[in-house]
Length: 243
Image (cartoon, rainbow, N blue to C red; front, side, top):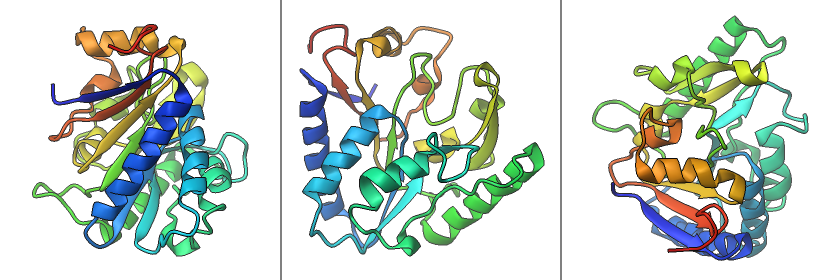
């Protein structure tokens, strides 16, 4: 396992370290830099801190994408795009042409979501370089992890986990009776860098299962980029203490 764990006593220390590492990664980008954003409470804290630290910086070479999105309007309180816009993209005044939200069709139907997923993949392929085996390649994909081990919108038992040909697909999450769009495992694993941010004791059982590599595999266990993942975790998620 090539994963690297960065453990912090509390979430604020985690966020500040991730901000410093993020800005260093941007400095190392050769030309344009393509970042896929995550939803969730920990990323929201990170984005708020990043907006403060990045004020006055030149962001013109950075494109912002999304790892997944709920099938709600972009103004809905549950929208990942809305959260990122309010906490990061708006405060930094990122131009619209550098922001690539996942399209949410109206009405939300399986056929319209499938078309939206194909449109987003086509947009990825217009902007991103590709790996030798043809996958769009992000410079960085930010992920979280749910208590059930899901990441992006790759939930246990969903067909999206087995997708081997498409970079973006619709997924129905039966446990939440909701539709979403998500990047698939092949495009996540093709990224140059993958960071996973996890905080809170509620995530500790899933994180322990991940670290023990127990079967059946959780969705997050199938995130296996060639260079490994960087995990930003707090002590509570590690079960109470950093190793």
